[in-house]
Figure 1 (tube, rainbow, N blue to C red):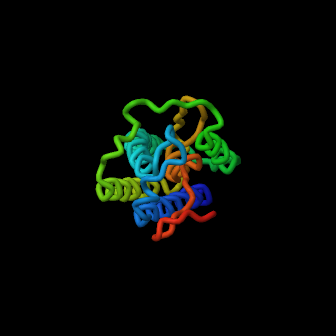
Figure 2 (figure 1 turned 120 degrees about the vertical axis):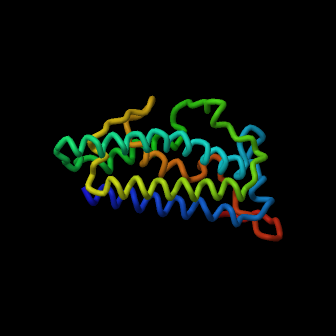
Figure 3 (figure 1 turned 90 degrees about the vertical axis):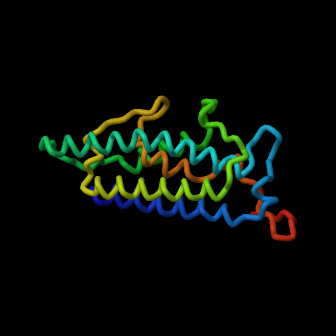
Length: 181
């Protein structure tokens, strides 16, 4: 079980670290839109914070339920296919199926970036706290299904943290000139 927990922990740390780097980006880069119908990085960051909020509601509830079930003496067994489940989650983040965001997940584009960053840091802390409570694999005692893919919400949240590849513009130097990745 520790392998699964460590896998999720490392994914959360790496993805939140990568996400946090966007807050040091040049303003031109943050406002860059790959095309008129796509979001800029500011909007993607806001969208991620909105999505995390709703995912954490489910994660927090599932954590409480898992800990209660552990007290009931249910046996924990490591899933043999946890790495495959993460690959399934990546399918969700790849936009390989049609998905329209609900209105409550649409970014306003005007939210203060310091506020978004602080919120994302709080969300990271909440994820790490939940994971510490489930360190022996207690999360296996709760099955939660997403509407499109069966997966663990914390894993999805971890992968969803990365700004969506379709919204990732080319890096811009401080002089404002675009360069290839």
